[in-house]
Length: 88
Ligand SMILES: [Zn+2]
Ligand SMILES: [Zn+2]
Image (cartoon, rainbow, N blue to C red; front, side):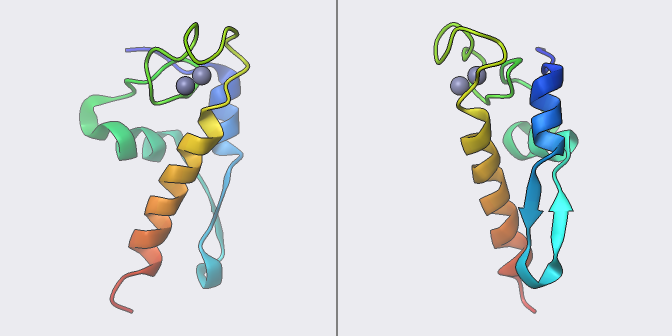
């Protein structure tokens, strides 16, 4: 299992989840990992991309990932749909 770089982890933890009336919440690495990989643990690449062949394929440098934010957006969108589209 790959471990994410410090930069990837900081990016995830620094990302705000906007829940509208419910306010804002910080993302967690555990939540991000669980969303895409369940209990299997992190299966993506070190840069934080959910594709485990990102470095060297999507980009050359460990710190220069353009996929992380779109991945976070997908995750955020999914949370927003479950948390705000409920029965309330
Ligand atoms: Zn990627
Ligand atoms: Zn990447």
